[in-house]
Image (cartoon, rainbow, N blue to C red; front, side, top):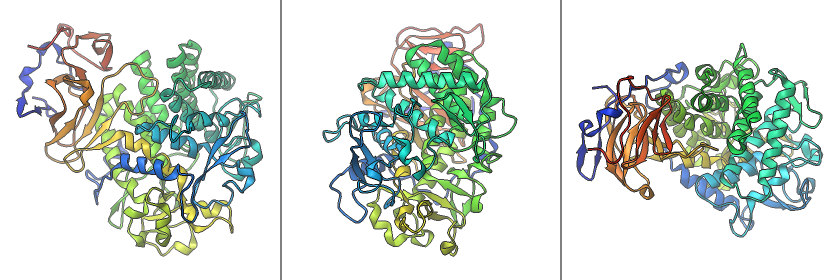
Length: 591
């Protein structure tokens, strides 16, 4: 028996492995090691996984309230400047009390898509319809970020250059110009019928295609002028990982529209990323390169180096933005491993939005390459645990810069960052980890201390809320592999479960009731582990091991084609390996 053999118990009946037809037994998939994740504690301490879905739902109902009472509230307003499109759009504070923002400042037009798109996406991922929320179409309002008036014809972080210099990024810092398009594409996947979104998505794809053609594999620039179609460089270091953002959007466009030019450009951008001789991770884009590599390898037969890109994502070896990656450590008894940011700034400085959004590509990546199931499962356990420390109600007061203002957050807004030693001289006495934010430095002398609370970062809580489900065993999570797998083919409910303990553990797996009876396939062990189950299943996970479980409709026809295992018209294993003499076809329920 393999060490990772899984047994399932449903309705009091043990389903032994002998019930599985030998004809569909494949070769178990060996797990890849990522040294940075290996260096994390096996089980983070203190361990507390909060209800991230509840946090995201509470954020939406609390923040999207125009009548909210309290100092610094409400956090939203309507921007009626009608930039780019003849319609009002939503304004949302970047940080609480930000002096640049609100209806009375800068004509009400300074707001960032990182916050507003993050809020729409986060809520949507946990099941809230933002097209019809309280009579408002927050999805349609996002079109104002499509900057056609300036000729760039892509989504940008602001609606117009008039306010661009007030904040970060617009038209001079590449990730700020690329990432809004990625957030938009994720939202577009969930609202494909929103009026005009098809047109906007195609225009973005065309702009990215043209830009990649001009760049011709050379992404060593600070940003790209999408109006003049010319790369630019300034005082900010070159951001080669913009290639990952281009590749992710272009591959999504190919999956949506079927234009092979987009596929060719996606692969060209991916090659440009992989060809770097050193780690060029700048902000948030690098992990998307790992997902796109894994997915194109699985669906297009390419051979991109996932390990290399994941190393750049985690290791903190970036030479552009020095030390950017995933933090590892225990500070004064608090395990902060898993958060994302600078591994060197003031001893380490991780950020809430970056931590949330790194899960968008890395969790579904496991569907396409299950050899990273244990690594990503372990990282997600740490990230899910440490991320609660950004929120004042979960961080002891002595580790916060402004605990006396915690009530202003109404329990749904976290600090922007966690740092080992505060970046503010006035808070140097606070022991690590220090919950703080950069807001007061954005507008010195004007932004209040409360601007350390990050509205934009907290907006993305729905990423964790859609992916993470707790089981009956503390520390073992059920991660939804489809939640952020955008523009995918048909797929059955799929979950990653990782056991951080040194001994086998049994957990209750929740199955979608609407799926009816299912046969459970484990892509790590490359075999079915149970048949005709529904509702709940007791799963035995091996010590420090993972399972990738796919809920296949019971009795579906199973066949192997070209290294993939299919159930009916959906792939359930992209890396299925079986001896040539073994048949892998069956029809109907197993005997």
